[in-house]
Length: 185
Image 1 (tube, rainbow, N blue to C red):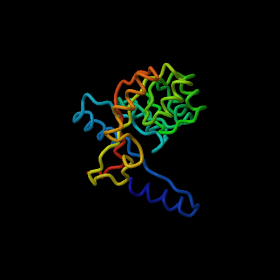
Image 2 (tube, rainbow, N blue to C red; image 1 turned 45 degrees about the horizontal axis):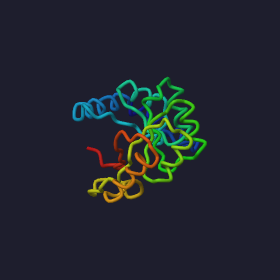
Image 3 (cartoon, rainbow, N blue to C red; image 1 turned 135 degrees about the horizontal axis):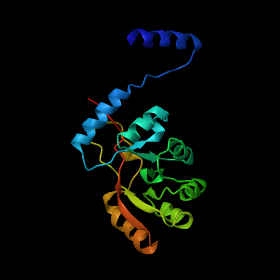
């Protein structure tokens, strides 16, 4: 395998083209380990990380769901035969055209962390259910701590939940957080 990878690397280097190697057996091993450690928690793979069809299909077959941030990502997942109930529309600032698309194709779960997002989804996708995106604490283990960028602070949770549930009349069914990229073993 190493010889094969080196031959591709040399060929691609001369052509100036990047490439990557995906080991689906490693994906399975890591998912099995995760499923054993957290049997009642469904992971949602962030499609923006890598849209390789073989990877997404393998993750779907292993029970993963998907975090899509755009209509293109939703369509990528759909093109592989994955159903809309396995997708969270998780862009922190959703474009109206993308909200309309999610509604049209049956993606009925989205994250929110502001009144503006609640208002947009209420107007353009009122049957959608919500996950409140909370700000994840950074314990120093994340290489890219996205919790600093997105999510509500503890003191913002109650007022925002009140707004979403009572003022807007929408259904909040859980919480979401993004821990960022972490250091692996």
